[in-house]
Length: 123
Image: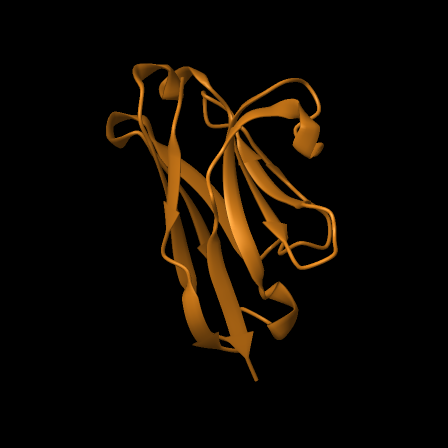
């Protein structure tokens, strides 16, 4: 069993940066992939990025590629999403997930979810 808690969201202006954290409980975390998704009201969860247990990364097309960087520190049971040059369209609840199957971009592939952290980007 893995419990995930996101933090680091907030209200920023366009062009600014935020670093989100995903803190996990449980020793199994270091053997899991970690994913970041975002969700806005009435829409499906959108894949942002993922990182495997070994550090291999995948980024969603059109969801911050080139501006966002995913990383993890297994010794701290924590994963991060660094978001630079934020835009108003990045406004969403950002959620982290753990334990993906093969299709990391499909939310249904992930076994554990945090509750999310709100990111709001103003003009």
